[in-house]
Length: 148
Ligand SMILES: Nc1nc2c([nH]c(=O)n2[C@H]2C[C@H](O)[C@@H](COP(=O)(O)OP(=O)(O)OP(=O)(O)O)O2)c(=O)[nH]1
Image 1 (cartoon, rainbow, N blue to C red):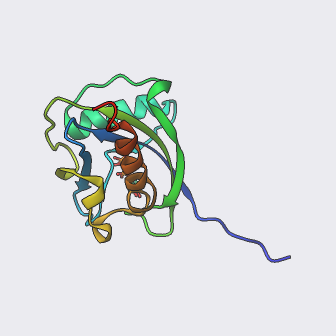
Image 2 (tube, rainbow, N blue to C red):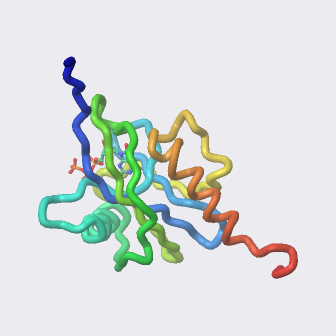
């Protein structure tokens, strides 16, 4: 029987970060043309939540504490910056009301309405999974006409 080879998997932790204006935060890392969610690889001995808190501190200068109520799920996609690799992303959600500063390997930070994000500039996981999820979360958070 022919053997099937699977692409190597990179395990990362990342976050859908929202502000109070219906926007979500994306970063572009130095040397990459793709915008994606902040975060990065989970080191040995770290939980996904610990890895994400460390990465958000390194990349954006923010201190967050995360628990399972912030956890959205585990999603897979092609890795944006490492051809031939796939990622498995542990994805959290949070609301941020403090300013952020691009630090370490971050070249750009943007806040964007997920309905207006240009697909061709997004990493595969962001384009195919996380921006659609962000739109759903924002829609479900909007008050209905009866509540408004
Ligand atoms: N943070 C993040 N990485 C993503 C997303 N989508 C996606 O394909 N990736 C890819 C880009 C990279 O190939 C990989 C993350 O690696 P990285 O190099 O940025 O992670 P890191 O900050 O831990 O850096 P390092 O240990 O390699 O120095 O996952 C995403 O939405 N967020």
